[in-house]
Length: 182
Image 1 (cartoon, helix red, strand yellow):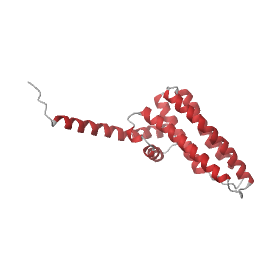
Image 2: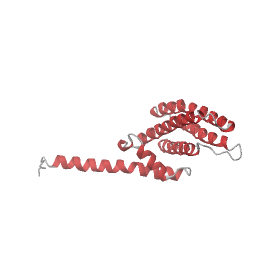
Image 3: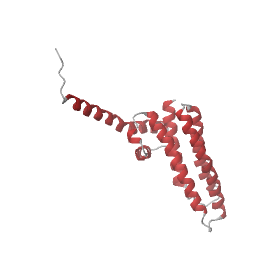
Image 4: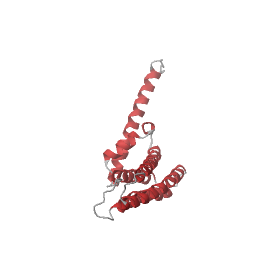
């Protein structure tokens, strides 16, 4: 019995393969987020899915390793934007001296986090996941230390609460993925 091959078979094969590949890729983000949320109580499913889906290249990511790299890039982007936001806030000459001091501290913390995340990406590429874990964990400390500074004086409200929370959750997401790979 001979198999016959027609010109219709090849396009059908590619259509089925690309549909299967697209479906498995489309499921990667929600499936990863489901696992991450189970491992990290500080991360919400909605935040995880929304963040990863909005990231450049995430729709082409076809494995956990690529999503891990994307998650670290997300943190770096967030930290860089937060640093710029703090810089803008510091230009206000009418800031309360305590708030200014807190913002100065946060600016330093976020400034130091940028090269740390650059190193984390290098370590990630070489599969030195323990070092990546340490670097990303230090960024969690940046967000909590920054936020806690404002709480040292009663009645002061942090202008960075949402940004600090986002940094924390992005870092928790990345740590969850790193731990799945490790």
